[in-house]
Image 1 (cartoon, rainbow, N blue to C red):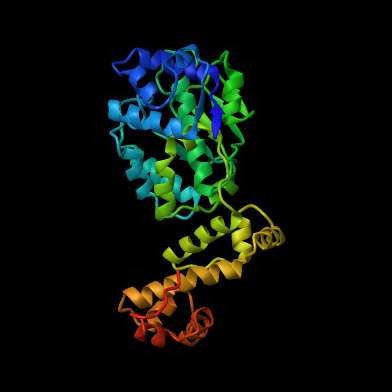
Image 2 (cartoon, rainbow, N blue to C red):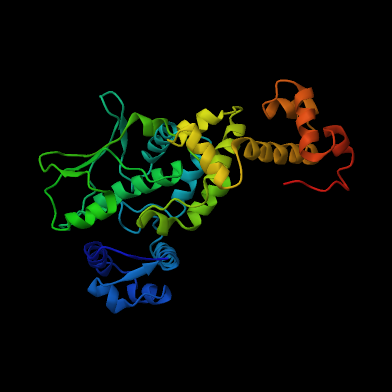
Length: 341
């Protein structure tokens, strides 16, 4: 897919990188982007080109933020941060953990989550930037927006974003990136992103595989408008899998609330995809049960408890329904048992 990058942002990036020691022409050519078009600010870029551009620039600079941060951020830092947050289940938990970690990383703004007022607010100091577009500060806000959208599986729109500078000439381009709720307050001394309590309570949908997928395509997903990917069934499956890592089991109502839709809407949309919450849950539980019986020495009772069954007999009945055999019979025939994944 090809996207148009707002011209003002392209020119701002051009001005910044041309003042560095980076071989911009070589990086652009390797990514299949015309250097002349780039310098004119007239460029359309595909997801694949964005990924190649980012990877080449990161290799040249050794900086995950490519010079957009307060100081260089060692390559690989983003990957470590994502893994550090892999076990959380809500946006509030993720923000709390993330902001604690980045305090020790000089190149990333010191974000603060303030929940004492009527609305939750994320605050951070503007990133020093001599240019009139304040592109470094705007990108910092955009990165936070994109990562949040990816984490909850849908586009996240803050209630308001307030920047501590006068409205720039490229305000229309900023609105394309961050929406129409951007405000400019030159008398202020910090960026304020006002969000809803509902967002903080929203369920995180990531797991280890989704983190790897995200990091592989991070440049395209961070710098382009967020697009919901994959059917609803995939999102529900991720949430159910996440539940298992926390020894909990959400009801269909819980899942609907986390997805910001009604339970009938959830049921209707899943039916249109040929599935249901129960079918997805059974598929996840069956896969985990088969893996545990095949690859571990855990007792059937222990496996049943981990999968949320109050009684081993209930697990045995469910497993028989899923596979046609009892857990004990399945384990005894593992060498020849057809695997269910």
